[in-house]
Every structure is written in C-alpha cells, then in structure tokens.
Length: 133
Image 1 (cartoon, rainbow, N blue to C red):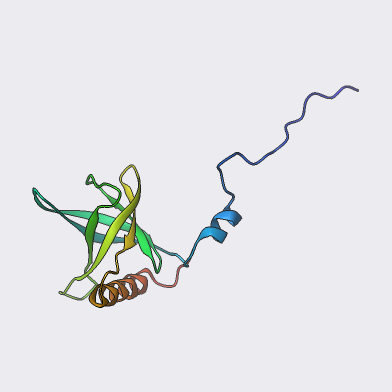
Image 2 (image 1 turned 45 degrees about the vertical axis):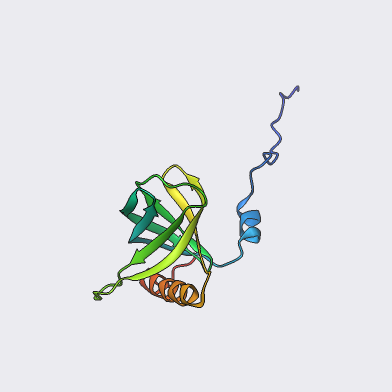
C-alpha cells in the first residue's frame, strides 16, 4: 500500500510556544478587565482617554485605548478604586503597540514615582482578585 505525503509539524520561525513565552516573562501577570484613564500631555495640550487594562505585572500593564500614542511617549495611568473618590496615578511609558493595545511600562524616575506605581499596582491587583495567568 502506498501512503501519501505526511505533514511534519515544525515550529514556525519567530513564533514562540506558550512554554517559551512563560520563560521570557520577568514578572507574574494578573489577568483583569478594569476601566482606567490615560493622560497624555503633549506640546499641543493634554488629552484624557478612557481605556481598559487587560493585565498587569510588577513592571507594567497592557491597555486598550482609542487614542493614538507612540512608542516612547510618557503618560499617566489613572485608576479609581471601588468605593473611593480619590484616583491613584502612576507614570508610564509606551513600550509597544498593536492596534489600540499598548504595552505600558511603569516609569520609576523618582521615589515618588515608585511609591505611586506600587500603590497603583496593589490597588489594581486587589481589584483583579487572585486570578493569575
């Protein structure tokens, strides 16, 4: 009996498996879907956009927002915890973009920035619960 050609499954160049992706992550990620605000200050003024945070780690978070931002642009992230009137702001910088999904790294230039980012992370992780990726 003659058999036809078989397909051999080879990994595609440039595509990482789930296991390989896990290895390259520096921090644990927390899956969430929370409303946040993005504040962008440019020469022509300040823009405020509503967005959604879809995951967070010690180093930053992934944000979906209908605003044009560029890699390297400095922004402020704002989150208002439930049952609170005071928002928490953390400085960030856009590291990558895919459509309107932005990878934002926390910008820690001063001790005050570190404290704000730490408070922001804690509150957002608390709001996300213990669901991890």
